Length: 323
Ligand code: NAP
Image 1 (cartoon, rainbow, N blue to C red):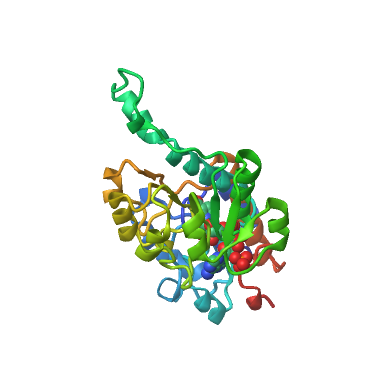
Image 2: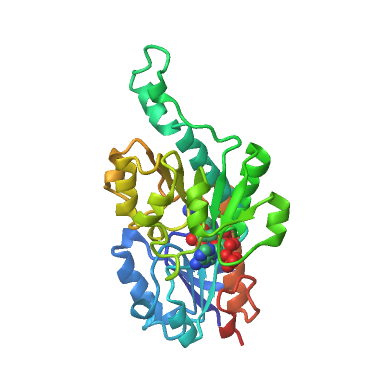
């Protein structure tokens, strides 16, 4: 008998078709009413879940008696209560690697966009303000040759650093849990403590996973350590940065600007950030290219399929549950 897969966020028709070859697939549909109610109703029959962007832990999964695996269409897994998954023996898989380059592209776009005030000056031009040559009040900052500080030199951090080092001749500083001798060699990167990095870098790029250790890693004290000419780029997770402290730092000129893809609460429908020309605000689009989203979907389906057919999935976040 086919096992049952329940989607907990929108999945494409082609994903559904592929999964239907091996499984019964249940897709909550907004046209049929409340999505959460449909999800809860289907949960007791589900052997596998697939999706992204939904918190899943004890409160949400207690009724999921048959659940074997959750396949997340994301690399970050802060939405899932891993202790609970381990207690229940539920496997969790994610989609690393396939989104590294597109997320790094986005990170670098934020660096460029902030430095050269791209969105702000685009809006200014379209508003018809360009009636004479721009004045120094519209000038931006150089990127080429400036110092790039990476907080979390993992897959995406290293991909951003490569862009900076080899495309823009930027000296690379990094901080993290451990030293990375191979990347130090490849990128000429130098390890710093977080405080040292904040004081030296012209662009501070946050690329750590959200965890108890990284929640509010950057707060008022850390922002004070940055140069007034420096920019903070956050493409990791919103809660890694204290958003109220960041807003204050942007308002007071403690730092020059920020490029943000992620926020404490998403979607970000209202925020003082919207009034700040030195904040570039994107709607969590790090991996949102057609090619990368397809690759992520494929990887998530491969992981789900393997786990439900009894093969060890490639991207097991909690290998200890795999027997
Ligand atoms: P990764 O390869 O696992 O790299 C994470 C890096 O963070 C590692 O170098 C790790 O250091 C470091 N790190 C972990 N905990 C730390 C701590 N407490 N203090 C300092 N450094 C720490 O992951 P990735 O693929 O680069 O992705 C990183 C994060 O980016 C994801 O977890 C996700 O939240 C976020 N992301 C966002 C988007 C978006 O759409 N904006 C897209 C993709 C990913 P060690 O290697 O020494 O442990």
